[in-house]
Length: 294
Image 1 (cartoon, one colour):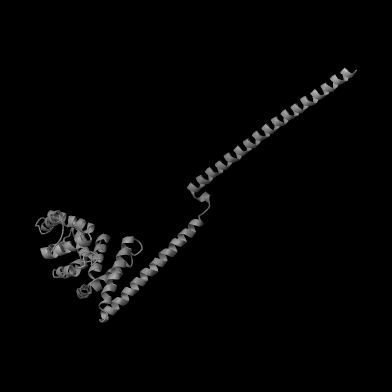
Image 2: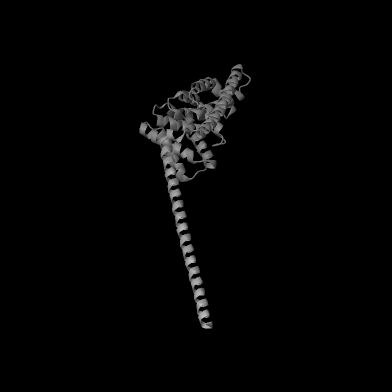
């Protein structure tokens, strides 16, 4: 039995009906909404969603949307088909993959690996990765030419890796997918060569990571050895501001020193005056005493 809330079931049924519609606008709206729903659900609801797709017969129209030329439509279809093929999303995802494979899902995904749009290539590579998590699907993918397609894709991506984070991610996903395919097909000579090529690709990516780390360290080292301030306008202005502040600070110190001297001089004058008054008073007392004695 499929367990889900009535409101969600009604919304899902409406979307699946629109996916099978003759109207392109209805299909586009439905698959975009379906992609939003799939990304938002997990657990038991995701399992029920996968089961509902299988029993409702809506896998075929969803797979057919992969052939739509509009990027928004086939990208959303790639996202949905990739997620429902993942055992993390649905423990019974292998059944979904088997059902979708009856409508040539894998051959429909492969052309998108060579799309001009990095986002489409990434979605296609991730869809293949989820499909090849299952041993049966990995063997089927090899028969359908996925191994050669992914190798070609890696060769093309080799010149772009490192320039764009998306390209780097595409290469990593493709390499992991090739590893999955090679792992379940080691008995074949072509699979062995594919596994070796995949290992070489992974080693190349590891070398790339090391190179990027070294480059980052070199940039930090160069940042510490920047040219003198006079060659950089912003640094010159900063140096001038610091120099002006130092001059102001020096002037303030001189004023404070002069003020302390004046205060000290006044105190000294006052002390001398007090001493003179005391001495005059003492002389006056002595004169008065002498006259009194006389």
